[in-house]
Image 1 (spheres, rainbow, N blue to C red):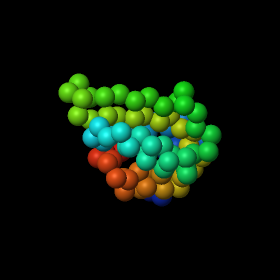
Image 2 (cartoon, rainbow, N blue to C red):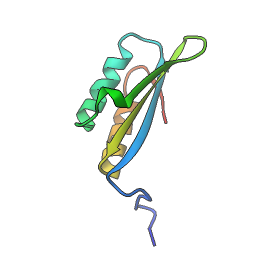
Image 3 (tube, helix red, strand yellow):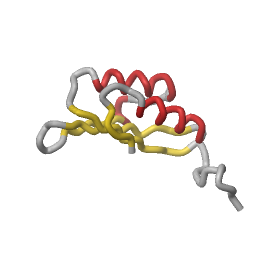
Image 4 (cartoon, rainbow, N blue to C red):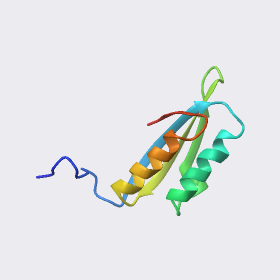
Length: 89
């Protein structure tokens, strides 16, 4: 039986992370830099970017191969602290 500190995920695993922010030409480069520090094998074909219907927001989905719970936690914490990021899902 898992205790509350164990992840129900089995690593490594495919793990999508969506980052939402206001449209800003520099947002993508800032977010890409965060991913580069935490995910060393991310390829461009595993990244999707989509503008909102009104064009005010952008969502960028990164499909990573997560190696550990600690990796995902550190990545999300840095993303949340990144300038221009409104939400990480």
